Length: 150
Ligand code: ZN
Ligand code: MN
Image (cartoon, rainbow, N blue to C red):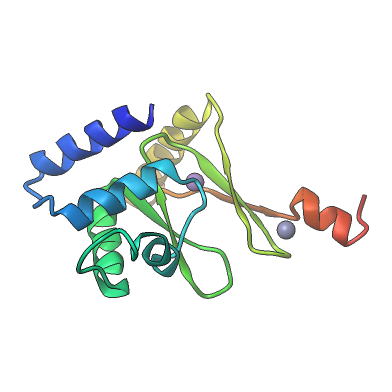
C-alpha cells in the first residue's frame, strides 16, 4: 500500500515536471509512511542523520512544493505551528482542543460528502474551488480521561 502510494506520487510529480532530488524522494517516503501529521521540524529531526545536505528550510520548501502539487495538505492545530499530511487517500481530521492532537478519520462516504461540499460552494459562491479540508474539533479519549470527563 505505502509502496503503491509512493510510486503513484512519484509518477504524479514526474508528470508535473517536478525535479525528484534524493532529498525530495526521502521526504515523500517519510510522509507516506508516517501518519503523525509532522511539522517540518519533526521531519527534519527524523531524517537529518540519514540524508546529506538537508536543512529545516529544505524540508519546509519541499513540503510546500508537495502542497502546491496537490499531494500533501497543510494543517494548523491551534498551537501556531504548521503540520503536513500526505493526502493520497481522502480523509478528514478531528483535532483535540485540549492537547492539539490531529487524528485521521476515514469514511467510505467522505469522497461523496467532499464532492458535494465543493459543488455547493461553487454554486453558492461562484468560486473556482481548488480543494477542501474538513476539520472537526473535540476532546480526544486520553484527554477525556485526564480531564475526568468520562
Ligand atoms: Zn487530547
Ligand atoms: Mn491526516
